[in-house]
Structure formats: structure tokens, C-alpha cells
Image (cartoon, rainbow, N blue to C red):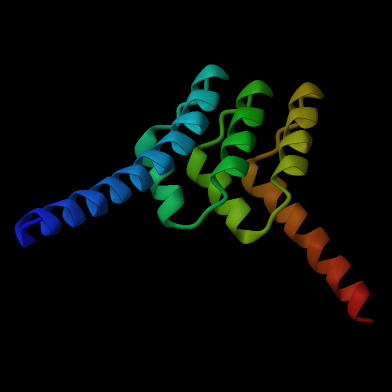
Length: 129
């Protein structure tokens, strides 16, 4: 076998491996995009790629975005992602916002997240003492 054919075969194998890796990544992101789309949330593939590059937990973010949409809450996707990155309990904050909405109480996303943060700080201080 001539050396040119060996080089070509090695090159094609490397391209195939890279292609499979990209296809695998796209398939996992496509599944999350489909989940978000099916629940009515607007999450684009580019948003998911950005989350992946920022090393966010894409699945958790999409689940919380879907939960917010199903609760009838209009919260921006980047706010949810940011709260998750900060370590806030977004699920509890969404439930709190939904209950406040049902009772006619005006509560903002920032207030719900800051309340969760305050609770976590108080809990950490109690553990430290």
C-alpha cells in the first residue's frame, strides 16, 4: 500500500472520529431542544451550545425553564441559568413564585432568588456555629 493511501486513510479516520463526536454532542443537545420545544419554552440550539461552553448543567437548566413555562411564569432563560450557576434552589424559587401568583402576591424573580440565597447563608452560618 503506498504511503499516500495510508495518510489518506488515517486522515479519514480522524475526520470520522471528530464527526462522530460532534454528532454525539448535537444529539444530546437536540434532545434537550426538543424537550424545551415540546413544553413551549423558547430555547434555541445556539443557547444550548452556549450553556455547554459555559459548562452549565444544560439538562437541569432546560428542566427548570420547562417548569417555569408550565407554571405560567415568564422568566428569561439566562436568569434561570444564572441562578443555577450561583447555586440557588431554582425549583423552590419557581414554586414560591407560582404560589405567590396564585394568591395574588406580587413577587419578583430577584426577590425569590435572594430569599433562597438568604436562607442558604443563614443555614450555613448555623452549621458553622
